[in-house]
Image (cartoon, helix red, strand yellow):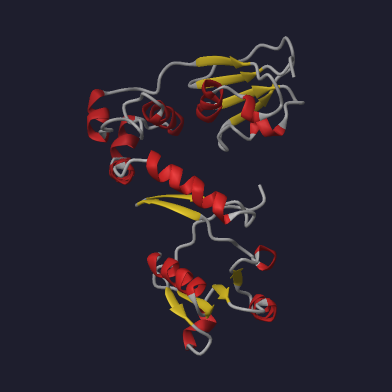
Length: 257
């Protein structure tokens, strides 16, 4: 990854904005939408600002000065001067989806955002709120964190009871139905190349849902990157047995690569 994606809480916090014109106004709207307080350098609160936006001509000196003061800086249309970039945003409060090209092409990020806007239903936020409200009930139903994660994974999967793109995900009804996390399963995936884009939709989905990935040491990192960050990874040697464990285990067979 070229950057670490982070979501920064700005509510009630001063944010420094230098410059004027439409670019500066766009940044102002973004800051205020996140609950931040826009200040300039004449404002006493500017010293407390942790991040700064610069929208103006010849920004190099301002960027250097503010960085030396310990602030994280974003310079409009100058990714080479930026400590961070602002993504294209899909807002389904409290769900936020950010699309970034790392400054390579804001037009591409905007086009992807528009596709996602059309794809993701407005009720996505309500599903997130319902899951948050059900946290205590989820812990009571599945006291083990692994069982809880597997049950949610099955419910949120395509066609599951809580499919985010499904017709009417109902958290209360799902809990009342008493679904469980499912049995132990082993799925063998045989990629045709080291390029993760060559994975089938089913293979990519399985990697994203798997609780553990069993793979040879020489497996291409790009394939492993398609798995969940918290999935257990186990190096597998040819002929060695694969221990049974709760949830979904995906074995990567890369012999054909």
